Image (cartoon, rainbow, N blue to C red):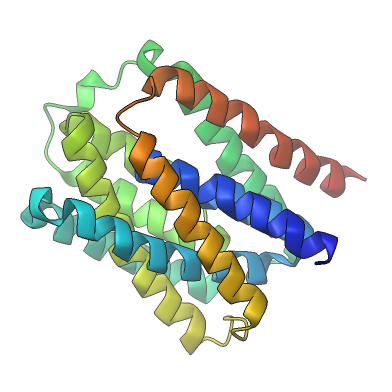
Length: 244
């Protein structure tokens, strides 16, 4: 096993452990890490493959608790944004993509560390327009960089408690992943399926299973802090690569 595949498997395992635990977040590890191992377009397209497979598995475990009337409108705006983002993907220089990925991940680290210190309560009394706008922005970022979820996560979390929030976000992001996979394939961005890809999918499912098993047994606040610290590593590496 060469070192690139070994590193990729470790990143996949860690990323989808986080997805199994929280219902979101794998692209924030996979995309920056895979951008270092491969190229940004390969990174975001492979991320959509993993997200589709693991999303469908995870969705099957929460299907009955999903409020589909709330999911479908958000998923529609997410899909519309993703279409725009994928259309722009081939027009953006690789170095700019790397900077965008680093900025998105830094934003999510800030959100994880801040938690309740930031007051978003003024949004709770408003209509779902903020949710739909955030879904469109998230879809656009996801289409371009593979990492658009954090902005949508904030608004979905405002409206739901932990368990319901997790079900809703799993459903929305699974629909989004399927749509992005179709767009990447249709635009010729999807890498050829290889034995290495299959092995990475197996590790993604393994990480997902462990995270899902532990999600009710771990203190979420402390876990978010650990995730934020882990995410600092690929961000710093990406920024150093851009600067050097």
